[in-house]
Length: 309
Length: 212
Image (spheres, rainbow over the protein chains, first blue to last red):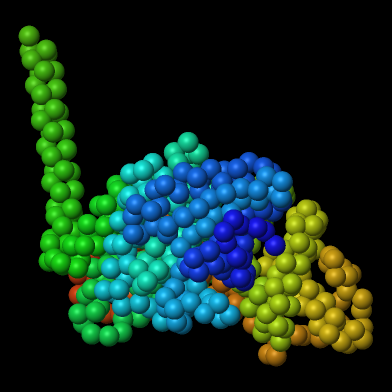
């Protein structure tokens, strides 16, 4: 069993392609999640070092925003060939913040989705705004998440947080194909708009109950007319976040967050904004046509003058 | 769905060599992915309808694709194999027979090789694994699969809002005014999306039929 200073590893609670996650207890008796990443699971050293460097960059930033899972300690055991990362622990899926080691299972958005099938639109909007805010903060600090999906959003004291920062990187990595199929943008991961795309797909899944590969098919409309109208309005935000062409999406996570906040407080403005965007495009097109017409007229006049000189 | 049913019953003339020629190139991962994405559901559905478990059906998919990869060159050179559709059906049937044979080793008279196709085996000697005849079921699944594959291609090519209008109006058969009201668009936009996407869908179905 790996050794982590000042922590007792209690039980393995998860494992993925890059490492294991343990339920642990620190010297003060507080429960933590400890991720152990072994070098031997990687074919080459580079991805191991990349993940370690990503966590090092993320660690100081993580504690500055409520929407990012706090990284409390990072360390490395060169001889044994692993590094570890101590994080705040997610709520238990059944007992919430009350942790019972023997039965503990972390609550993620993936589990909420499996349990509830579809989340109410209002809940989707609140969650989306919280994660978009966290994402914007990450981006302002020069970092990208690259693997946003429901299983990487956990709840700590009921608050949604971006977790599993194994693929976090900065701009030096450039675009890549890491991430999860269906949440990965067409152009790849590792950019602001690719992260926005992934968040859009998350909102699609939790608001429709459908798989992200079914996008953009809408679900059966249940509930009241108001709920349907809300879903259609959220659909507009999702459509913009998930445009195939990156330049057509929200430019920043803050922009997406503002749209989601507007949803909560001023739906009429959101509707008008949608119509305004269309009107703006129409006027822009008319402007281009007018400019071409004027230019054409000038050229014709010039040629006429030349011919009649 | 009525417009889509009409598309399914139109006659198309399959030709052999466009995408099939690309399948010979082992490095052309995109074409192989295209092939897999288009046909795995069809093979899987037939395998399940033959009474196989999900795990066995997955094996049938895998082994059929491997057979195609191994024998695609032979198929293209020798016209005795008939159409690609028929050849794929036979390969699938052999792989299903292999799975059934694993359950009951003496059930089949011929020793059908599990790592490739044995073209000398008379299919008539292999019991039809599907109640009601594999051929009829295959044809129905083939058409459904073709339509699904064509819809997926259309979905990737068009604006998402238009696909949503099309899905509600054509696939789910909502009246146009209900679609317009729900999506907060005009009825004209709904009709335009329907017309445009139906034309695209027809084109995609035709292209898929020609490719395979």
